[in-house]
Amino acid sequence: MEPVKFAVLGLNQGAKIVRDALKHEEVELVAVAGFGQQAESFASELGLKRYEDYRLLLRQEQLDAVAIALPNGLHVEAVEEALAANIKHILLEKPIANTVEEAQHIIDICKEAGATLLIGHHRRNSPRYLFLRDLIASGRLGKIIGLQSSFAIAKPYAYFDVEWRIKKGGGPLLINAIHDFDDLNYLTGMKPVRVYAAARNSIRNNEVEDSVSVIVEYEGGATATYFISDGTPGPWSYDLAAEENLNYGFCTEENSLRIFGTEGSFGFPHMDLYYYDKDHYGWNEPLLKEHFDCEINDPMAAELDHFIDLCRGRETVPRCSGEDALDTLRVIKGIQKSAEIKQAVDL
Ligand SMILES: NC(=O)c1ccc[n+]([C@@H]2O[C@H](COP(=O)([O-])OP(=O)(O)OC[C@H]3O[C@@H](n4cnc5c(N)ncnc54)[C@H](O)[C@@H]3O)[C@@H](O)[C@H]2O)c1
Image (cartoon, rainbow, N blue to C red; front, side, top):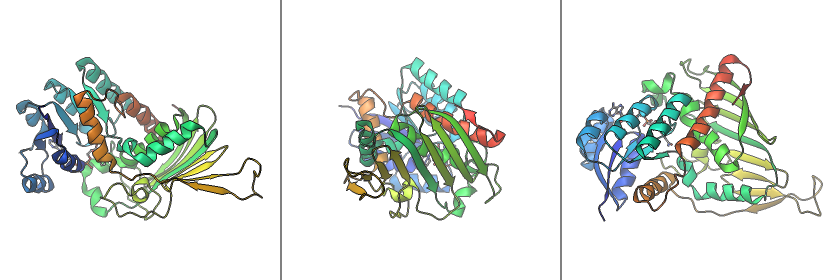
């Protein structure tokens, strides 16, 4: 069978997709796009055909599939260009777009063109995460009444030298919190209906936030609290706790997410369920703990496997569709709005 002719646009986050693609036996990596010192040395180290302008790549190469790992503000135009080049399978990094309107536009034009669209919320490919999703769906935690999640992390100073990350359209809400809110949507299946948020930029005084507290209300009654900061040394984030992404210095002592149900509560990624025996219920009784051992994988590599399965038609439903990513984006946009107007926002 012919390999899937594939290109990767953007070579920072995209570099990880490139490395995974080179290991995938069904993929032919035709070319990559990126500019600057890092992109140049990465491509020459691996002997890759590189274009400085991704549009030129799309116009000159015959491709079946493309991964778009360009800055958030280029997602819409890159999808338009990819479709104009008749590419039928698109893996688009998160956030799907900077605005709800742009996200809807991406969904609509991919539908019209009959193109597959998979959004890079890669945690949806983690076995521990999927185990937790199944556990919640099984009812073992009872009715979910609350969630506590955090992304408290320190990014290196050089991270902020990249301009788009510190301007509107960047910032930790759109770049990082979007993963955590996708988790809450996907893991619980609950629909968020209202958000309240307070955002600050008091660490760096950039145009975008650096620390935010959020309360979310869900249909059915559950509530969530969430704190994010990208300027505090701490272990309470998925990336440091989950041991999945080798780019991070892991610190696995703490959970990044706690889920509270009427029958039990659960800490992720430690995978411990806390509950009482039916006949010995309540705070005077021994609190029981069950630990679940699950495989730890590389969810980004698994995401590419899934994408190639979609390209081949072996799978037909993207694990994160454009609509799923839009639902998550709506939460982030609501949080931004609430922080701006200092009032609750209905989603
Ligand atoms: N899934 C994840 O966990 C994850 C992690 C990091 C970033 N991301 C997403 O990936 C995307 C890229 O983020 P990043 O941190 O790698 O950004 P970055 O700014 O560090 O890198 C962007 C890359 O795109 C290239 N580029 C920019 N404009 C171009 C153009 N016109 N033509 C060709 N190349 C061009 C740059 O040279 C660079 O290689 C963003 O959407 C981000 O949200 C996802």
